[in-house]
Amino acid sequence: MSKAVIISAALTPAHQLRQMVKLRWGIIIIECLVAAIGWLLDYAVTSWAIVLLVLITHTLTNIVLQRLPRPVASLKPVFLLISAIDLLVLSALLAVSGGASNGFVALLLLPVAVVSVLLPALASYLFAIAAVLAYSVLLWLGDLTVAVSPAFAAEHAMHGAVMRPFSRHMWQMWWAFAISAILISWFISSQAALIREKSVKLNQLQQQQIRQEQALAIATYAANAAHDLASPIQNLVLLTEELQSSDTEQPALQEIKQQLQRCQQIVADLRTNASQWREQQPAELLPVIQQSLQSWIVTRPEISLKLNLQGETSGCRIKEAASLSSALFQILDNAADASLANGKPQLDIEVTLLQGRLSLQIIDFGEGLSEQRLAELGQLPQQSESGLGLGQFLANVSVERLGGSISRRNLRQGGMETLIRFQDQAA
Image 1 (cartoon, rainbow, N blue to C red):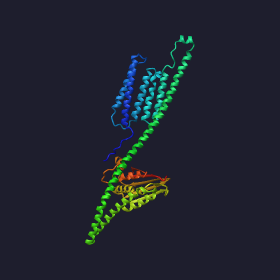
Image 2: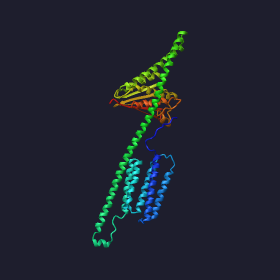
Image 3: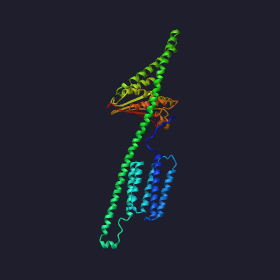
Image 4: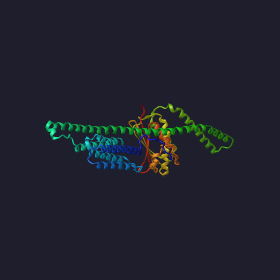
């Protein structure tokens, strides 16, 4: 079994988990340092015991997260739970150390940013709302006014004047926090989604490049083999002619000569197609598929072919349409072999052409493939006794090179569906 040597452009969940553990250790260290400095400077805290308990809880959760068994089926619930714990821990520390008036209240935005990077947009928006609610609770629990003695207020008659500006300042901070939380969640989540999308496309391009390199290597070997076979085949043809002239007519010799002449024709066609490959122009795809099906069914008379054509008769042109025939032959041969192996010599083919989009559905009546085998089929050259390795790989490469896509899936009633799609490339 061959393995794809592909470096994924996207970060794996395990790597994200390690990064999150490191980030939380950094936050915990900062919390401990700030708590130690506050204790040494006799900072006003509701209860140092609560601070110590919260810090221990935060540390233990990160130890558990670091020792989480791997692999984990899905880390999204883990990230969501840990971020919720971080938000609660930070809220608790702020609640006992000044509430909304604490200068470290902006740390409540940190879980929002983390969730925006690691989780979908909906989760980031929910966390932004949760952070705003936490800030609101801290604002509601905290003292919204400046403590002013009654004597000072009576003397200067400015009690209300002192309260209102500070209260207004705190509410302005609340609005600034709420706007910041929403904007951070929107911007980071949108950028993270864009990066994930680009990573997926880059990964697909890497896979396609590897398949193209494999196909190029196979094509090089095939060209060398065709070149090397030309002389031995010619010599064998001459030998059969000499045997026929010097001996009585034998049917076996005549059959050998015909087969050798066929080999010569195959090698000649290979050279001709290779020389004309760069000169091919866009052509209608539907006639090429119909001609390929007619040519193929002649080579497989034991197969009953059910063909259904739907939609338009033209409108889908692709470059090098003629070179699709060999790929179709490989796919049809494999589908026919699967049906024969299951005792059902039949194929159902449906061709649909609508608005410049052509889809070719090939259904065989075999036993299907395992999920692992189905995922590997056509991705890389593989050794297989049933012949489902190299041929399907070359077929995949050919279809993708021509701008199409190919997918396979098992059917509930048995058998496998191969779906090939093309879009008009005339522009």
